[in-house]
Image (tube, rainbow, N blue to C red; front, side, top):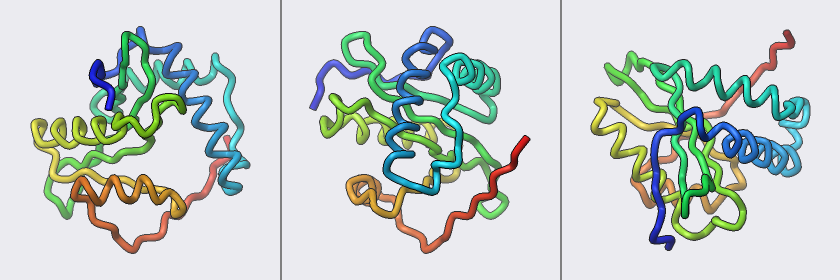
Length: 161
Protein backbone atom coordinates (compact mmCIF):
# COMPACT_ATOMS: atom_id res chain seq x y z
CA UNK A 1 0.00 0.00 0.00
CA UNK A 2 1.23 3.48 -0.85
CA UNK A 3 0.75 6.00 1.96
CA UNK A 4 1.28 9.24 0.02
CA UNK A 5 -1.45 8.68 -2.59
CA UNK A 6 -3.71 11.51 -3.74
CA UNK A 7 -6.71 10.88 -5.99
CA UNK A 8 -8.21 13.96 -7.58
CA UNK A 9 -9.98 15.29 -10.62
CA UNK A 10 -7.72 15.70 -13.59
CA UNK A 11 -7.04 19.18 -14.92
CA UNK A 12 -5.13 20.84 -17.76
CA UNK A 13 -1.78 20.67 -15.95
CA UNK A 14 -2.00 16.85 -16.12
CA UNK A 15 -1.91 16.80 -19.92
CA UNK A 16 1.63 15.48 -20.37
CA UNK A 17 1.21 12.70 -17.80
CA UNK A 18 -2.25 11.74 -19.08
CA UNK A 19 -1.06 11.56 -22.69
CA UNK A 20 1.90 9.36 -21.77
CA UNK A 21 -0.16 7.03 -19.57
CA UNK A 22 -2.92 6.74 -22.16
CA UNK A 23 -0.50 5.95 -24.98
CA UNK A 24 1.25 3.36 -22.78
CA UNK A 25 -2.14 1.81 -21.99
CA UNK A 26 -3.12 1.66 -25.66
CA UNK A 27 0.14 -0.06 -26.58
CA UNK A 28 -0.28 -2.65 -23.81
CA UNK A 29 -3.89 -3.40 -24.71
CA UNK A 30 -3.20 -3.65 -28.43
CA UNK A 31 -0.32 -6.05 -27.81
CA UNK A 32 -2.52 -8.35 -25.71
CA UNK A 33 -5.87 -8.15 -27.50
CA UNK A 34 -5.92 -8.53 -31.27
CA UNK A 35 -9.38 -7.03 -31.73
CA UNK A 36 -8.02 -3.58 -30.82
CA UNK A 37 -5.26 -3.71 -33.44
CA UNK A 38 -7.34 -1.98 -36.10
CA UNK A 39 -7.16 1.19 -34.02
CA UNK A 40 -4.44 3.66 -34.89
CA UNK A 41 -2.34 4.76 -31.96
CA UNK A 42 -2.55 8.55 -32.01
CA UNK A 43 0.44 10.84 -31.84
CA UNK A 44 1.13 12.73 -28.61
CA UNK A 45 -0.28 15.84 -30.26
CA UNK A 46 -3.49 14.04 -31.30
CA UNK A 47 -3.93 12.55 -27.83
CA UNK A 48 -3.33 15.99 -26.32
CA UNK A 49 -6.17 17.37 -28.44
CA UNK A 50 -8.46 14.55 -27.32
CA UNK A 51 -7.50 15.28 -23.70
CA UNK A 52 -8.33 18.97 -24.10
CA UNK A 53 -11.68 18.14 -25.69
CA UNK A 54 -12.51 15.64 -22.93
CA UNK A 55 -11.79 18.20 -20.21
CA UNK A 56 -14.12 20.65 -21.94
CA UNK A 57 -17.11 18.33 -21.38
CA UNK A 58 -17.32 17.73 -17.60
CA UNK A 59 -21.04 17.01 -17.80
CA UNK A 60 -20.19 13.97 -19.95
CA UNK A 61 -16.59 13.00 -19.22
CA UNK A 62 -14.73 13.01 -15.92
CA UNK A 63 -11.12 11.99 -15.56
CA UNK A 64 -9.49 11.32 -12.20
CA UNK A 65 -5.79 10.81 -11.56
CA UNK A 66 -3.73 9.01 -8.95
CA UNK A 67 -0.72 10.97 -7.79
CA UNK A 68 2.20 9.65 -5.74
CA UNK A 69 4.83 12.12 -4.51
CA UNK A 70 3.56 14.72 -6.98
CA UNK A 71 3.76 12.34 -9.95
CA UNK A 72 0.64 11.21 -11.83
CA UNK A 73 0.89 7.41 -11.96
CA UNK A 74 -2.60 6.41 -13.05
CA UNK A 75 -5.95 7.60 -14.28
CA UNK A 76 -9.55 6.59 -14.61
CA UNK A 77 -11.65 7.91 -17.46
CA UNK A 78 -15.42 7.95 -16.95
CA UNK A 79 -18.49 9.07 -18.80
CA UNK A 80 -21.96 9.90 -17.59
CA UNK A 81 -25.20 8.69 -19.12
CA UNK A 82 -28.79 9.10 -18.06
CA UNK A 83 -30.19 5.66 -17.33
CA UNK A 84 -33.91 5.38 -18.01
CA UNK A 85 -34.12 2.11 -16.07
CA UNK A 86 -32.22 3.47 -13.08
CA UNK A 87 -34.09 6.77 -13.19
CA UNK A 88 -30.97 8.88 -13.04
CA UNK A 89 -27.31 9.25 -13.88
CA UNK A 90 -25.01 6.27 -14.32
CA UNK A 91 -21.23 6.61 -14.10
CA UNK A 92 -19.48 4.39 -16.62
CA UNK A 93 -15.82 3.58 -16.08
CA UNK A 94 -14.23 3.49 -19.51
CA UNK A 95 -10.54 3.09 -18.66
CA UNK A 96 -8.62 2.49 -15.45
CA UNK A 97 -4.86 2.40 -15.86
CA UNK A 98 -1.96 2.38 -13.42
CA UNK A 99 1.66 2.67 -14.60
CA UNK A 100 3.48 -0.68 -14.33
CA UNK A 101 5.82 0.20 -11.41
CA UNK A 102 2.82 1.20 -9.28
CA UNK A 103 0.61 -1.80 -9.88
CA UNK A 104 -0.43 -4.21 -7.12
CA UNK A 105 0.04 -1.50 -4.50
CA UNK A 106 -3.67 -0.87 -3.92
CA UNK A 107 -3.93 2.21 -6.14
CA UNK A 108 -6.59 0.72 -8.41
CA UNK A 109 -8.70 -0.25 -5.41
CA UNK A 110 -8.36 3.23 -3.90
CA UNK A 111 -9.34 4.80 -7.21
CA UNK A 112 -12.42 2.58 -7.44
CA UNK A 113 -13.40 3.43 -3.86
CA UNK A 114 -12.96 7.12 -4.67
CA UNK A 115 -15.20 6.79 -7.73
CA UNK A 116 -17.90 4.96 -5.80
CA UNK A 117 -17.84 7.71 -3.17
CA UNK A 118 -17.93 10.37 -5.88
CA UNK A 119 -20.96 8.68 -7.46
CA UNK A 120 -22.76 8.46 -4.11
CA UNK A 121 -22.07 12.13 -3.30
CA UNK A 122 -23.18 13.31 -6.74
CA UNK A 123 -26.50 11.45 -7.01
CA UNK A 124 -25.46 8.78 -9.48
CA UNK A 125 -27.75 5.76 -9.41
CA UNK A 126 -25.12 3.22 -10.39
CA UNK A 127 -21.50 2.71 -11.40
CA UNK A 128 -20.85 0.36 -14.29
CA UNK A 129 -17.87 -0.90 -16.24
CA UNK A 130 -16.66 -3.59 -18.57
CA UNK A 131 -13.50 -5.65 -18.23
CA UNK A 132 -11.52 -7.89 -20.54
CA UNK A 133 -12.57 -11.53 -20.15
CA UNK A 134 -9.04 -12.63 -19.26
CA UNK A 135 -8.43 -9.89 -16.65
CA UNK A 136 -9.07 -12.01 -13.56
CA UNK A 137 -7.31 -9.61 -11.21
CA UNK A 138 -9.67 -6.81 -12.17
CA UNK A 139 -12.68 -9.12 -11.87
CA UNK A 140 -11.67 -10.03 -8.33
CA UNK A 141 -11.24 -6.37 -7.38
CA UNK A 142 -14.64 -5.40 -8.77
CA UNK A 143 -16.37 -8.27 -6.97
CA UNK A 144 -14.58 -7.32 -3.74
CA UNK A 145 -16.00 -3.80 -4.10
CA UNK A 146 -19.56 -5.11 -4.52
CA UNK A 147 -19.91 -5.11 -8.29
CA UNK A 148 -21.91 -7.96 -9.77
CA UNK A 149 -21.07 -9.71 -12.99
CA UNK A 150 -23.70 -9.52 -15.71
CA UNK A 151 -23.90 -11.81 -18.73
CA UNK A 152 -23.72 -9.16 -21.42
CA UNK A 153 -21.78 -9.15 -24.66
CA UNK A 154 -20.05 -5.96 -25.73
CA UNK A 155 -20.44 -5.17 -29.42
CA UNK A 156 -18.47 -2.55 -31.30
CA UNK A 157 -18.50 -1.16 -34.82
CA UNK A 158 -15.77 1.19 -35.84
CA UNK A 159 -16.76 4.22 -37.87
CA UNK A 160 -14.10 5.42 -40.29
CA UNK A 161 -14.25 9.18 -40.69
